[in-house]
Image 1 (cartoon, rainbow, N blue to C red):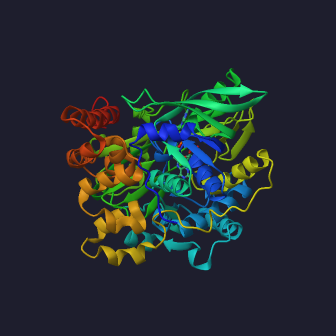
Image 2 (cartoon, rainbow, N blue to C red):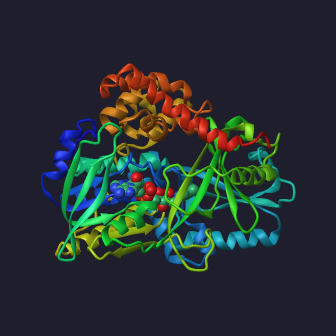
Image 3 (tube, rainbow, N blue to C red):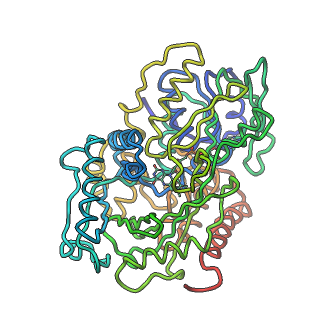
Length: 530
Ligand code: FAD
């Protein structure tokens, strides 16, 4: 199937398409959960609409730790089902989108022979449960090997380390790839389109009022009719449930997690380090191109927000934990080049702390028969989608048809990074790795720096603002040592003619990004260096 561009510019036509038919399924929210559901349903031949209140992946699905992981942590919580599912989903994401599941070793230091034995027992169980291939099983390094291979890690007090492979992804691009594939299979997909209310008839939601949230685009609206609605609104699931029932009956517990970013030369780790951070928690120190990111935290947060604050005490907690195990000059707040904060849409469990709440997903059917899904992980999004689409087909009165999302590549995943690399022979390794990680097999058509990438973002990836490109399409805001600032002007200039921006509008787009960054960095730096 040829890819259909995800162009979002013709708002009139997009809103007309939303109102033009009664869909089998309307999905509310294009984070990874909603995007995965829309892709699966469209592949099975259902007529599908996918509406997103802001930009694709602009909620939690761009704020994660960006790991497709086997769920070792769930083993400690005794949740063997989750371990099995996470481990098998990890393999599938690697097969359908190899550019979005880059294998990286994770390193855990051990302080004693007892700790080694305990960790090894855990890893063996994990490998057995997850059906881990022989060449992907863990290794044990002595303290001497650890010091030689990972000199950025302080090894005092360690007897050695356990090293095992996991995968790093780009959460926003994984979401976008699912959105693009849903579109390619015929779904009507509209961003900046928020559901504001439902029409309920005979105990069933028959339509939703959808309004354009693009600044200046408020005149567009649609009456979106569907036989089944799915609420995949992440941290806003309760708010959408309240639209359906007319009453607040919260089921979610939001947990905030932040990440900080430093130049890779300030934390020159070669692999992802897992470092204890007290209270039974650990943090990750992750190398990513020219930067290293450090995260995360886990604490309840009261309300759903697109830009939850980057709490200063969380920044200091991450710095302290990282400094305890990183060699070299201690990291200070002034070393931080970027930071992000996100909210986990967890299913509340009475009496449990944020880090103890299960990461399992749950599905509820509301009083208007709207199916709501919350909880879960990026890693298992495809399986979650499969279960929900089975339920949607049953609600449509048919037997669930086979799910094919594990067998066909996501856009960009048609070839492996090794196969793509020779097509970028003019680029150095770092630039090639960045482009392959963003675009996969499409990388050769996006050569030409920020200008070419920004134009591609508008024409093929549904970007409507400079921030869409800067934060989510290119990752420059967080993963360039300059915060992507140098790219803002060329990108804005490339987007302006395509989006009909005046000079004043173009300047305002740049200003929005600069203000965003100034705000985030002010939260990070606080009252001075620490
Ligand atoms: P979102 O991505 O928030 O999507 C919901 C969407 O609904 C939003 O885009 C929103 O704009 C839209 N919406 C809301 N209201 C409306 C409306 N009225 N109309 C239309 N649209 C609406 N998982 C992993 O597997 N690996 C990790 O390493 C990992 N790390 C994490 C670290 C942190 C700090 C956090 C916060 C989470 C992490 N997760 C991780 C979990 C993972 O990120 C989430 O489970 C997942 O992204 C949730 O996706 P979602 O689609 O349900 O929600």
